[in-house]
Amino acid sequence: MESEEFNLIIEPGRIEKNYWSDLWRYRELFYILAWRDFKVRYKQTVIGVAWSVLRPLLTMVVIVVVFSKLAKLPSEGNAPYAIMSLAGLLPWQFFSNALSESSNSLISNTNLFTKVYFPRILIPASSIVLGFVDFLITFVMLLLIMVPYQFVPSINMIFLPFFFILTFLASFGFGLLMSTLNLKYRDFRYIVPFVVQFGMYISPVAFSSSIVPEKYQLLYSLNPMVGVIDGFRWCIIGGDVPLNLTSLMISTVVILAFAWLGIRYFRKTEKMLADYA
Image (cartoon, rainbow, N blue to C red):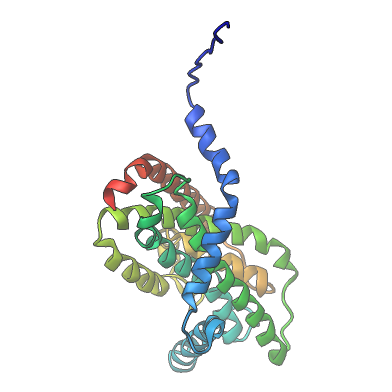
């Protein structure tokens, strides 16, 4: 019986190509992780998913009372302050929730990725789905609030998917960085909540970017969520609300840079995640 001959071919970069194809092969695991996180989040809660409505609603009420009624800050265009603030909360809530969930995702799943192989990037990616669910609920709530105000959304709504993609990339990039750093240096579990809380005050969630002095606009635009939030308001409110293209371009560049940095750093340290756990 003749022996068969096998040729072993070593092709540079093949491991990286196989890794990204594995993301599609393990797509069912992505669905399972996302559904599990959703069920765990509202397990043993009295009102369940209703918390996704109450949190942005109560936040909007506080913003309106403090910044509109007490501080007398102006709204944007002809939109009521409640709609303006909720339009700003829409992308910020997605970003903050996704960042909070993804930063703790690796620590919560150490017993999973230390035993079996799968692309570890699926863990922080699946946790972002929770932020997407909250985003959809808040978006529906925004449309319902427009009814009593008799406010009609702008035709610019057709550009909303573009700004949603920017928000997702910001959440994904920062989430990958924080999830890895949080696993490696446990101090980051205290830093992330501070960043989320502080970020809300320096982002135009409760106020319009127009109140920022012109000489600080360029520096202010380095906050990647500034261009995104302003873009959401431009899409929803429209009318007299201008779109600052300079701020948008700066935010887009910063978001793309952090998305690239997050993926690169995660892939570089992925082989050592089990050691950090």
